[in-house]
Length: 210
Image 1 (cartoon, rainbow, N blue to C red):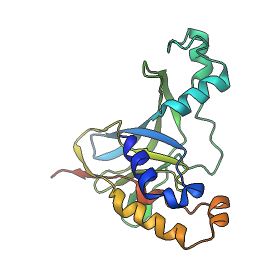
Image 2: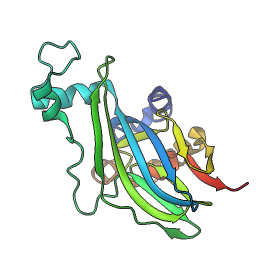
Image 3: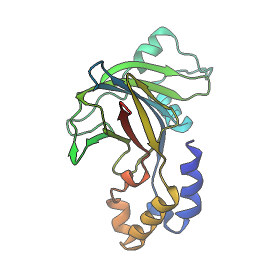
């Protein structure tokens, strides 16, 4: 599913390529955990990084030198949690809302880190929520659009609710981005890329008891 961003970005943003994002592509997976009382207890988030970014991480850490896609125990330990060193104001590129209120999430708890046979790294972490699940809206995106997310990793609801998923309209999203970029000097766009990430986000809404 990551190719959808690549194809659209190349075809629609060619005139403003110098300022074009994104640079990293992530397939996100969501496990929405609803308890017996109908509260959204936690969200487990999976990130599968694109091949190039995964390779850069491995090279930076000096891992998988033989390129066979298999990590020994010490290499696995060195890779574990590599993407969990968040700065204080980083929201984890995960945004939840109920009504007009943005929801606060707990700090991430690492669950797993794996290197797939396709050369891509997948990590999972868990974040506490603790609100009534009905009508909670979930979106995974980087506001700066440096990283592009889609829900290629799937959405699973554990508990008595279902996920209503609305895929992003990429045509509308890239048209809006083009309009913004053409309306600002290229040099300004390169220094301070507009925060358009939400425009490219799939939307998940929890429906319970229906």
